[in-house]
Every structure is written in C-alpha cells, then in structure tokens.
Length: 417
Length: 157
Image 1 (spheres, rainbow over the protein chains, first blue to last red):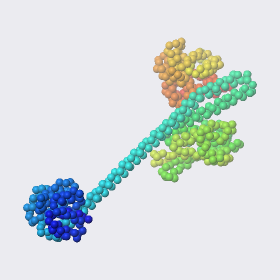
Image 2 (image 1 turned 30 degrees about the vertical axis):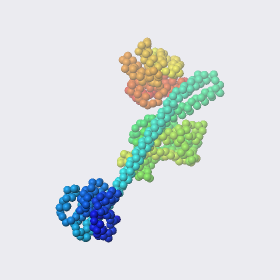
Image 3 (image 1 turned 180 degrees about the horizontal axis):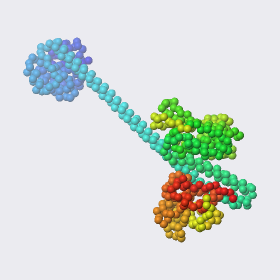
Image 4 (image 1 turned 30 degrees about the horizontal axis):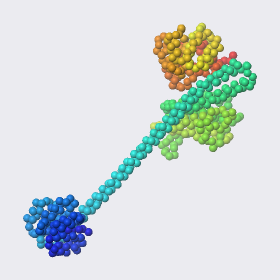
C-alpha cells in the first residue's frame, strides 16, 4: 500500500484531502507543520508522495521541501505543492531547487488531485518494481559471478591435477627407463665374468681334460651348460631392456621380407624338424624392423620348439585387415601365427607373456622365460596388442594386432606378398 | 686363403682386463706364429707407449673400448690424428653389442671389429685367420660389410 504524507497547518484541510484520497486505499500520514513533517521523515522515508501546503507559518512548504531534499534518502520522493492560484509561487520554488514536483491549485479539484496522486503513486510503484528487479538482477549477477569463480577454481584444480598426472606419467616413464637402463648395465656387466667362466672352463676341459676322469669332465660340461644358459638369459634381458632405450623411428616396411629373413635364420631347425611353414600375404606398416624381427623370431621359434614329438610342425603365418568396433575409422591388422604343436591350457594364455613365466622345465624345453615378454613389449611399443589361443595337444595361435596410424588411413594399405 | 704368415709381425694389445691379456698372449703363443706381442693396460698407457717409448710402431693394434683413464674411442681419435700413427691397422677388440658403438668406431676409421669370443678355441681360430690374412688388402677401410670380423668355423685337426 502506497504511503502518502500530507502536510498542512490547517486541520480541516488535512481532513478534506484525507477524505478525498482514503477511498483509493492509500496509507495517509498527516503532519500539521513543516517541522512535524521533517520529524516524521526522520524515521519514515518510504513515502510514495508528499502533498504539501505552501503557505504555512514558520516553515513554508517551499522551505520544508528544500530541507527535505537536502537529505539523500528523501530526494526521490515527489512533492505536490498545494498552492493559491498564482504563477508567482511556482517561480519562488524554482529559486530553491528543482525536484520531482508538481502543483495543484486551490480550490482543489478532487478529480485532478486523485489523478495526479495516482500518477505519482503509479510512478513510485513502477520505480519500486524496477529497483526490485535491479536487485534481483544484481543477485543473479552475483550468483553467476560466484558460479564462474567456482568453475574457474575447479578448472584450475583440474589443470593442477592434470599437471600432476602428467608429471607422474613423466616420473613413471623415467623410472621405467631407469629400470631398463639398470637392467642393461647390470646384464652388460654380468656378461664379462660369465664369458670368463665359459672361456676358462673350456680351456680347463681342452687342456686338462685328459687328467680328469669322466666325473670331472661331466662337472665341467655342467659348468659350461649353466654358463651358456645364464648367457642366453642375460642376452634376452639385455634385448628386453634395450627396447625402450633405443627409440629408433618407425619406417613403413613390409612384414613379408622380415618374416622371410627370420625363416632363413631358422632354416636348420626347420629342416631338422621337417617343418612346413607357409607365409601368406602380410601388410606393409610403419614399424621398427629391429624390433619386429625378434618378435617373429621368437614366435616362430616357439612354434618350432614346442612341436609334438614325431609330428612335423606345420606353421601358418597370415594376416587380416579389420576396423575397431568402437570407431570404424580405426583400422588395424591382425597377424596370425598358428601351429600344430603341443599347445597349452587356455588359462595360461595371459601369464605366458609375463617375464620369466615358463610352463615347462628347462630340461624339457630350453628357454629363458623372456621370449614372450619380449614379444609383448615389442607389440606394445607399436601400440598394438598380442594374445594367444590354445588347448593342450591342439596347437597354438598367436595373434598380433597392429594399428594402422591416422595418416595412413587416407591411402589404401598395400598388401604385399 | 693364404696360410703363410708374414715373417715377423708386431702386434700391440691395449686391454685393461688381465684375463683377456693372458688369454690373448696364450693364444698367440699356442699358435706358434712369429709375432712380437706387446701389451698395455689401458688407453693412457697405450698413448704414452706409442708416443714415447715404443721401439717400433706396431703393425696391428688390438684396441679394447671400455678402459679406464682413456677409453678406446679417445685413443682411436688421437691415433688417427697423429701423422706417425694413423696408418696402424686398428682392430677393435671388445664385447660391445651396441650397434651405435660399432658404427662410431667404423666412422672413426678403425679397420676391423672383433667381438671377444666365448671360448679359447674360438679365439685361437680368429687370431690364426687374422694373422694369416693380408689384412691391408682384404679389409681396405670403408667397406662396412666386412667391418665386423666373421671367422670361418675352425677346421678340426
């Protein structure tokens, strides 16, 4: 409800103006002097309008108005002066100051008074609404600012976490490299004394063998066997550790000649075992040939080694192109190495790629337990993966999946024979 | 292959490994070749020997790579820079399997690379082949194919 302050020194005037305005539902506050009006305005300043008689003793309406307008909090309250019909009086107030003022002349036309009052009250309401809206906007703005700040904070937190993650990755990679470097240095330094054991036990045998009985000779040959095994082991650890140390660039190469090279290297074993090896079309991919060669060497060598007694090994190497189910654009090649060997239980299909994991005693099948771990590491260096399927007595299939990198996808990948 | 060893061959071995020096000397003495073998214990001693105290400049130098004080690479570099020493036939005698190190010594104009063998018999076989070959004609510098010495398997007897 809008509040209106009515100031007049004459009680009857206050009464008549009140009776004119009361029906409109305004809350009316009456003051019978300028001084009293000022007193009221010290406590209450939420008036929509002041109706002020100009001619009052002591403080005139104009003087009161100018005192009112000296106060910041009251400056927005419009004043309607009630005055005798004289233009001169209007000019007098202009001498004081201008504000939101209007004039109504005596004798008062009730309709005009109601109309003027309602206009000012309406203005006050609108003003208040605007202020309320502005405050709401300010509040919303503040919320937004808070939200933005929060978001900024969380973004910074994420950035920090990301940075920490990256640093951790760096640290991990460095630690991994250190480990590999350690393995490299250790195995390198271990090789020297081993070579000596091998050389001197061989000399002992060849130069003093005739002074030893069969037992003594057997011991020497056992020393030599153990040394040879240890040398093979160290050589494999060295190769393994070198994979991540030597980061040679990848070159687009066909896998076929690499596999052919490996087969040539294994020729004597292939002949000895009467193995039948077929190599079908293999893709050309960006690879590190120095790594891919030992990969195929190990897998084919395994197929030959773990063959069934009295059954000549049959080994087939072939490839298939594919796209990943998640993203059709992700092309990869799968290279299969299948054999008809002794196989293994499928439950071991993951463990066999672990370092030093062996399924057989080295007296049955010689080996260091590093070969397949090496294969896995090599494939992973190529961002691929390796898996195995097998059953005891059913042969094994090793599957190498190698991705076709982004820039290769636009051009069709040539399959070479 | 010619089997007639050259009359009198001066050979120098630079190796910090006592066992390897002993094996090398034993192998040469077993082969009964007319070879004058001198040995030094490391790179610094090698350079000191070559530049000040050698009676004659050796025809063949067996140079280990991993040695204290001055390693094989440094020695190789100094020898190749010295007008009086640069023509020595240099055989790198090392256990290294690093392709980078082998490439490095090849680029530094070493003549031949021999990997220290795993047995005494093999060592004798290698040395016999080396000393009975006209090295300078067979291993003319610059042929990388022949840089790493491949011994033909020893014939029994």
